[in-house]
Every structure is written in structure tokens, then in C-alpha cells.
Length: 162
Image (cartoon, rainbow, N blue to C red; front, side):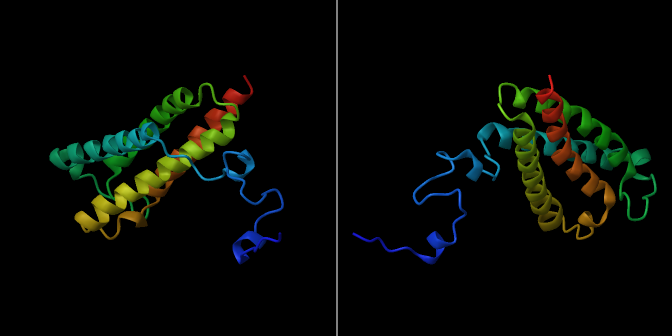
């Protein structure tokens, strides 16, 4: 008995057999798996930045530091958060990647999940609620996102070699 194939089924990659899922073949599983724990890490890391930003808004001497064109709208926020994120991400990634088999790949997926969560929260709060339309135009924001992506992958690579 011949089975019908759809256009989608005919366009599947060579290593994917009909009816095979990412669970059956780990090579198919390229998208990040977002668990409650990863979402929790993402929200807590975002809240760290948000709370520090609120503190900067409350303290006039921090608020009055002039912005650096195209680099940072609030340097008092960026100068503290970027090294802080690097340290926190290294510690969190080391904890999260413990016991994983392919640590670098898992670190990259973990970092990608954190970036997605943080971009969504930034869009929701800063762009939609606060109407800060220039929020994404500063280099410091994109550097922080790069840290969120790269630090867990680099930690995974360093743990792989151990």
C-alpha cells in the first residue's frame, strides 16, 4: 500500500525519516529547549538589570551622567551591568551545564534562550510600556545580548575540555 507524501514531507532533510522526532534523533533538535528553570534564569537576569536601572533613575547623581552617543543612553547602568552580567552568566552557566553531555552546544542553546527571553521582556517593558523607541539603538544593549549568548557557550567549551 503506497502512502501519500505531502510537500513538507518531501522537503525533509536526508537524516530525518518520516515520523522521526527530535527526541528520536538529537541532530534534529537545534532549537533551544526552554524549561521553567531557564525562563526563571532569564527573568531573574532581566530583573537584575531593571532594578539597577530603577536605582539609577532614583539617584540624581547617577541619572545626570551624560549619555555616550550610540554607545549608552545611561552609562551608569551599562558600566555596572555589563561586567556584572558577565560574572553572573558564567556562574549560572556553570551550574546549568553541569551534567550535560555536549556542554558547548547546550551552553549555546541556554544562551540563545536567555537572549530571546530578555529581548521579549525588553520589548514589552521598555518599548511597549515605557515607549522608549530608541532603546535598541545603543551598542551597550546589543553587547549585553552578545554576552548572554556567548558566555554560556564559552563556559560550556571550557567545561568540555575539563
